Length: 372
Image (cartoon, rainbow, N blue to C red; front, top):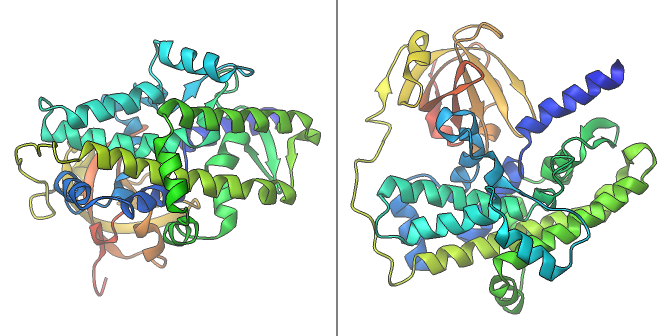
């Protein structure tokens, strides 16, 4: 019975850990930002407004609970059998009919270049692209279908019960004890020759690299005693993690630079959503405004630190809270002693398992009220 409970726990956790964690995706995006051309920088600013690439990098995960995006899950990965040659691998990837990260990246590029896509479609394509390039460099996103990319392979990582996919999403990165800015600073060190080589490789080649790594990881886990991953596992693999994040950032920049070249035509200006234009609503009505951009002010009734995110309960104590605020990225490190204080939150209201939720990465959109 205990093993069954553990299995269910790990499956539940895997729903949350579906790609590089927040730190990983933020790091990839920040590295990419450092290698953009001026034209690409201008186009990014035009499409994202005041949102940085790092802040946009986890959007594709954040919206997966929304009805509109419930079918996007398969676009984050690709499933392939082990033992393929490079040629057989490429043929299978190209011929695959079902949604996968390879097809998703090509579609994002197409939408960004097309003159027929709207501004909102281009912005969405850009956010997906930023995320998917990070995903395909995470080795367990190019892996086997039968274990859901390692999600059902239970392991003990340095004393903690988890799964192989989660170890590669976030556990190894967390053990480095570096924030995304420090990672981008320390590991964005490739020479001009390395950058040229990485960027000239094909998209199939990028996937092949992850496939080779995941194949090795499967062999290792099969040979480990009781799936017990001790301290040497971190030392042996953290360099791979850092290299994959750096390569993802360099390659993401190359795609964006190529898309937003001299021939790129910016879409017609649309009405931007700003803090000033956000609708102010009562927290009791949050559930009636799913999908809308709003400002909600209320009291904080406790929070829970979950490592790469903090869940904040507004309106009442858990489980009777009226709104969940998820602090990630820059916002995560900003707020510590918040219980009992009043706050005004700005963002898009989404539905997460029947409860209204706002995800915040920009600390300016989680404003504690002075004197309260």
